[in-house]
Image (cartoon, rainbow over all chains, first blue to last red; front, side, top):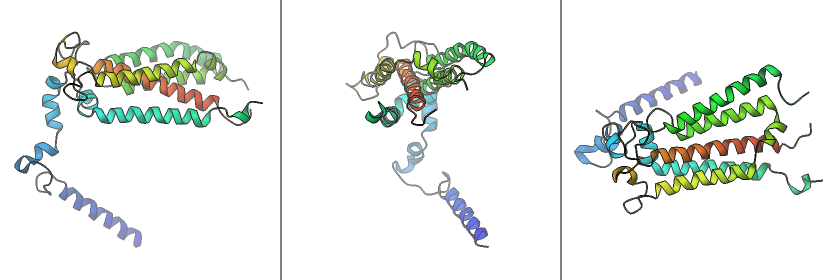
Length: 98
Length: 148
């Protein structure tokens, strides 16, 4: 009974979120006033302007390396830090040399 | 129990490792034209390294692995990425100056020499991901604490 109620509550919350986040009749917030859709949904802008602004025909690479370049720098830093930490933790310690 | 696998696996690995490497290099070099890019291609080439380690064993892989060289190459990849992003610093960070000002890297969109700094960044990120993943793999397999 409790599990059924919990599942129904989750389903209800999901439905409410789907209605609230829908671009046509959901909540409107953020920049732009009338032009709010242009600021919130940028995918069409990337598809139309990506080739002339960045030059690559692979739009994903345009986004990853130009529009969202800071994200890629952070990702590279995370990879570097993870490998440096793994090598620093796993390397031979002083008592291992006998 | 011997460390490496049998003759069949080793022969197959000898045949497939160059093909995997070539495919990864293709994915990196064409990252701005076709699906894929530096991360994916670098991970593909690192998969060839994993295959080498599994098929030929740890002793054989340790002979072909130079830790200093891989560290230097990883740092070089990261610094190249950072330097390419700073090329257009007079306008903005991550400004694609090689594409907007023209030159060698500003060809027709869809050709190999186009898209400004994107090929350079793809090469740098691919090198960085490949060397980093191989370093992590060798660290995990070399520095284990349990006895044989």
